[in-house]
Length: 87
Image (cartoon, rainbow, N blue to C red; front, side, top):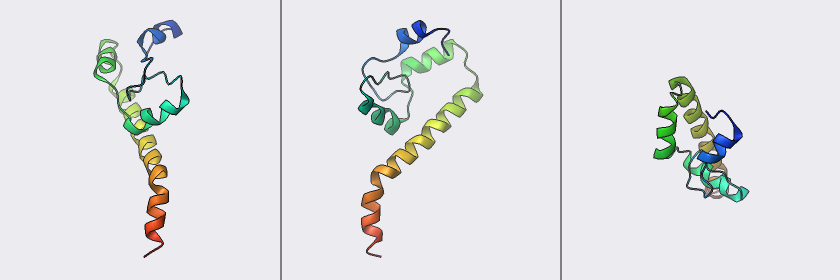
């Protein structure tokens, strides 16, 4: 989407907001990005301005949704496991 690392650095979010373009300097912030699996309105505008193909957008969103689903399942697994033991 960006032609250089410098261009990307101009557009990523230095503070995590739950967007695909969060920099996540603190790796604990990756969890927020994975839980939301979202693209903020500013980044959506950049995607539209750069004419990113529908197929790439669709693939990216499907991938993020799949990661989000697995991430949430793992977070909730111990809770679910506890209740399944009683059935």
